[in-house]
Length: 213
Length: 213
Length: 213
Image (tube, rainbow over all chains, first blue to last red; front, side, top):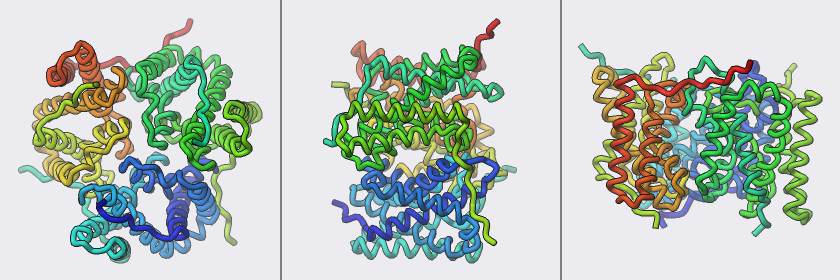
């Protein structure tokens, strides 16, 4: 028990995967000198668009949704190739991409957290699994590109937004708010925190140690 | 159901693992200045020789074959140490290694894909799992060595060969061709594409975005 | 069959996780120029303190202990933030940290190996799972930091100490020694090998290939 998993229509799920894959390929296009080939771009797309869900399902010990249908992998590959070809277009409409990405971040976080709660996980690990579902694809992208992991560095509250939303969701779940409403509030919190951080340039402090006199 | 898994005699499986581990250690031997120690070499050998099968089994949510017997790990370690000691010999017989590696690539792809089909996966994810089983060990090797992932960069159709073979296999499976024959054709396709690519210098294009006027 | 899993009191397990997380954050604090933020430090703490156990449980195909309670993740995060703030203190008491870390290494190795044996794994893979449980957190830390993997390079017998202990444990298990005694001897072997190596500067040789005349 633990409640139902928040689900979204199939078209919305594929759209969210595609946004992730486009993002991954557009990010990879910044590394021209690396000689990444078309397979590399396709693989980055699969990892970025589907990686968060794969890490979520491996963490929960359940069958991988990404491998459950013939459509997820081709959608991710097609989106990655489009992201590569149109990298300049996507770069010129960067605010649109940021908005779509913030929406995707919230959806993946809400789906991941409610799925973890449905598997009986306690609140904190359920919110953590939702966080991983939201930011894990980008982490895999950076590992595959042999780059520092973006979300672990000073930026615009990407992981913090995801974590704030998934923690809100588990609190609402404890207060017996319905899955659908909790998930919607989670996605809204992620969306708001992320876009406010981008707009106002909010970021987390860098690591620092205490000076000892 | 979904059919039987293609299996090969135990000696052939150990030989394929050993080829992978030798390759991994020989590759690592190109990084002398890194001060990798004997444990590092052994670990690279385990990751390269057994990593593809481990990623396959984790993806399928089944017990790891690599941990099911006392022999896989020692074979991989022994092969890696031989690969390290004889790196110059293997480098001087590079064509032989390329041929053995192409054979291994095809076998791992065929085993992975038929196992995924036997677990009931649809065609595309089954071929993807076969691809990961074939190239995943090399990817893990590169991540552990903190190097760019070789198969994602312009080269001689390594991943393309594996993907062409595993996609052929799922098509033959749909046409009710027997597991053994499908797997043999898969391995032959991988072998032929890879060696033709090496011989003729075929490669995939680099990533490129459309110019906007 | 397979025997029981060696377990330690909850406070000791949390203390071991905290030692790992402190270590991870203190290591990360050496990379000031990287602009790692507080989330990055927290995530490194979770990966270092809980990563070995996560890799162990994924390898065994069982539910992740790290996600089974509300306490593991907050303990790891809190320890990482303390490790960051007090990095200079921990650096000034380096010998104490080395001793605590050697103890943790042995405990994680003993817990991992006995759990793998309880799941019915043969001796060699059981010892390997124990090794991964002991050194896997540090490996994940290095991958996340995009650094060469410390334990694979010339150092003071870190992985060798863990492997010697876990192999000793499986031999004692075969000789029908009780789980508790075997695990205690395993931890003692790891502790002794590691600290003797630090004290005497013992290390494994670097990779080397045979010269061919």
